[in-house]
Image 1: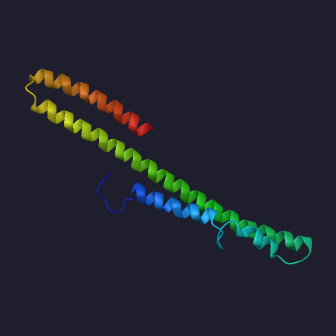
Image 2: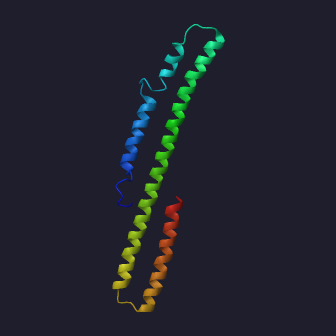
Length: 133
Protein backbone atom coordinates (compact mmCIF):
# COMPACT_ATOMS: atom_id res chain seq x y z
CA UNK A 1 0.00 0.00 0.00
CA UNK A 2 1.27 3.49 -0.69
CA UNK A 3 2.19 5.99 1.95
CA UNK A 4 -0.72 8.24 1.01
CA UNK A 5 -2.37 9.25 4.28
CA UNK A 6 -5.74 9.74 2.54
CA UNK A 7 -6.17 5.99 1.97
CA UNK A 8 -8.22 3.96 4.42
CA UNK A 9 -6.70 0.96 6.13
CA UNK A 10 -8.45 -2.39 6.47
CA UNK A 11 -8.96 -1.59 10.18
CA UNK A 12 -10.71 1.69 9.34
CA UNK A 13 -12.92 -0.04 6.78
CA UNK A 14 -13.96 -2.66 9.34
CA UNK A 15 -14.75 0.13 11.81
CA UNK A 16 -17.07 1.73 9.24
CA UNK A 17 -18.70 -1.65 8.56
CA UNK A 18 -19.32 -2.03 12.29
CA UNK A 19 -21.09 1.33 12.31
CA UNK A 20 -23.25 0.28 9.36
CA UNK A 21 -24.06 -3.02 11.08
CA UNK A 22 -25.19 -1.20 14.21
CA UNK A 23 -27.42 1.08 12.13
CA UNK A 24 -29.02 -1.94 10.51
CA UNK A 25 -29.50 -4.01 13.66
CA UNK A 26 -30.01 -1.72 16.63
CA UNK A 27 -33.45 -0.46 17.51
CA UNK A 28 -32.85 3.27 17.11
CA UNK A 29 -34.95 6.03 15.59
CA UNK A 30 -33.29 5.49 12.22
CA UNK A 31 -33.29 1.68 12.10
CA UNK A 32 -35.60 -0.51 10.10
CA UNK A 33 -37.24 -1.59 13.38
CA UNK A 34 -39.02 1.75 13.39
CA UNK A 35 -40.88 0.98 10.14
CA UNK A 36 -43.62 -0.88 11.98
CA UNK A 37 -43.98 1.99 14.47
CA UNK A 38 -44.23 4.50 11.64
CA UNK A 39 -46.91 2.50 9.86
CA UNK A 40 -48.84 1.95 13.10
CA UNK A 41 -48.84 5.68 13.80
CA UNK A 42 -50.62 6.45 10.53
CA UNK A 43 -54.09 7.71 11.29
CA UNK A 44 -57.46 6.12 10.68
CA UNK A 45 -58.05 7.78 7.34
CA UNK A 46 -59.72 6.21 4.35
CA UNK A 47 -57.93 3.31 2.74
CA UNK A 48 -56.55 5.26 -0.23
CA UNK A 49 -55.03 8.03 1.92
CA UNK A 50 -53.66 5.47 4.36
CA UNK A 51 -52.16 3.46 1.50
CA UNK A 52 -50.39 6.57 0.19
CA UNK A 53 -48.98 7.36 3.63
CA UNK A 54 -47.75 3.80 4.12
CA UNK A 55 -46.19 3.88 0.65
CA UNK A 56 -44.37 7.13 1.43
CA UNK A 57 -43.08 5.83 4.78
CA UNK A 58 -41.89 2.61 3.17
CA UNK A 59 -40.22 4.58 0.40
CA UNK A 60 -38.13 6.50 2.95
CA UNK A 61 -36.98 3.29 4.61
CA UNK A 62 -36.33 1.62 1.24
CA UNK A 63 -34.19 4.57 0.12
CA UNK A 64 -32.23 4.42 3.38
CA UNK A 65 -31.61 0.70 2.99
CA UNK A 66 -30.45 1.15 -0.61
CA UNK A 67 -28.05 3.88 0.52
CA UNK A 68 -26.63 1.64 3.24
CA UNK A 69 -26.25 -1.21 0.74
CA UNK A 70 -24.35 1.07 -1.65
CA UNK A 71 -22.07 2.16 1.19
CA UNK A 72 -21.43 -1.47 2.09
CA UNK A 73 -20.59 -2.28 -1.54
CA UNK A 74 -18.20 0.68 -1.64
CA UNK A 75 -16.42 -0.51 1.53
CA UNK A 76 -16.23 -4.05 0.14
CA UNK A 77 -14.54 -2.74 -3.01
CA UNK A 78 -12.15 -0.58 -0.99
CA UNK A 79 -11.23 -3.58 1.15
CA UNK A 80 -10.68 -5.74 -1.94
CA UNK A 81 -8.45 -3.02 -3.41
CA UNK A 82 -6.40 -2.89 -0.21
CA UNK A 83 -5.99 -6.66 -0.27
CA UNK A 84 -4.80 -6.55 -3.89
CA UNK A 85 -2.34 -3.75 -3.09
CA UNK A 86 -0.98 -5.75 -0.15
CA UNK A 87 -0.50 -8.81 -2.36
CA UNK A 88 1.29 -6.75 -5.00
CA UNK A 89 3.59 -5.31 -2.32
CA UNK A 90 4.42 -8.84 -1.10
CA UNK A 91 5.22 -9.96 -4.64
CA UNK A 92 7.36 -6.84 -5.19
CA UNK A 93 9.28 -7.54 -2.00
CA UNK A 94 9.92 -11.12 -3.12
CA UNK A 95 11.10 -9.86 -6.52
CA UNK A 96 13.41 -7.27 -4.94
CA UNK A 97 14.91 -9.89 -2.60
CA UNK A 98 15.52 -12.30 -5.46
CA UNK A 99 17.04 -9.55 -7.61
CA UNK A 100 19.44 -8.63 -4.81
CA UNK A 101 20.39 -12.27 -4.35
CA UNK A 102 21.04 -12.73 -8.08
CA UNK A 103 23.05 -9.50 -8.31
CA UNK A 104 25.19 -10.37 -5.29
CA UNK A 105 25.79 -13.98 -6.29
CA UNK A 106 28.99 -15.10 -7.93
CA UNK A 107 27.12 -16.39 -10.99
CA UNK A 108 28.27 -15.72 -14.49
CA UNK A 109 26.39 -12.97 -16.33
CA UNK A 110 24.63 -15.47 -18.57
CA UNK A 111 23.46 -17.48 -15.54
CA UNK A 112 22.25 -14.27 -13.88
CA UNK A 113 20.13 -13.52 -16.96
CA UNK A 114 18.70 -17.04 -16.88
CA UNK A 115 17.93 -16.75 -13.15
CA UNK A 116 16.39 -13.31 -13.70
CA UNK A 117 14.19 -14.70 -16.48
CA UNK A 118 13.02 -17.53 -14.22
CA UNK A 119 12.29 -15.17 -11.31
CA UNK A 120 10.52 -12.71 -13.62
CA UNK A 121 8.25 -15.48 -14.96
CA UNK A 122 7.39 -16.64 -11.44
CA UNK A 123 6.72 -13.08 -10.27
CA UNK A 124 4.47 -12.44 -13.29
CA UNK A 125 2.46 -15.57 -12.45
CA UNK A 126 2.17 -14.49 -8.80
CA UNK A 127 1.04 -11.00 -9.79
CA UNK A 128 -1.58 -12.37 -12.16
CA UNK A 129 -2.92 -14.60 -9.38
CA UNK A 130 -2.83 -11.78 -6.82
CA UNK A 131 -4.67 -9.34 -9.04
CA UNK A 132 -7.37 -11.71 -10.28
CA UNK A 133 -8.32 -13.12 -6.88
